[in-house]
Image (cartoon, rainbow, N blue to C red; front, side):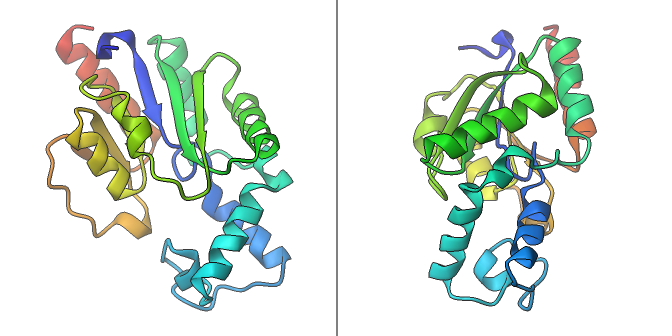
Length: 204
């Protein structure tokens, strides 16, 4: 697969979908309050609880009916659709949600409802918290854009020949990019500008 095939690789939570905001609402409904570090990405530190309890709650949320109605992240709908409809890009979603097939189905329904039925060519849904390394290796040296909010996954992408775009969040704001292939973005308008700008530069 070459970049010219116009495939964009993207994470879902924190990139396409506002998982964090929905999770906090879900936690509040279940009697939990944020009494740790409010800006920390890690649920155990954010909610001041044991790590095993945090992992259990994240899995419960990721397998709940809430997966059907997560809101879009920022301006994702407008600019994802423009990349697809006006520039011919298709998206492969690589997300660590759950290995529960019914919850996976809800995620796919959620994404299709928000973005349309033709935007996503492939859904790769891994278990809760699973590493994405093996999946990303299948795209090695394709120079495809890879959009993530977890620095470790952006680094893996850069190391294997992808163009990593790191969506800025409080939890990754202190990460220092050591690779030219990793660029920060604040929203999907930024992503659109970088991809279309590169497309123009390369004459694609």
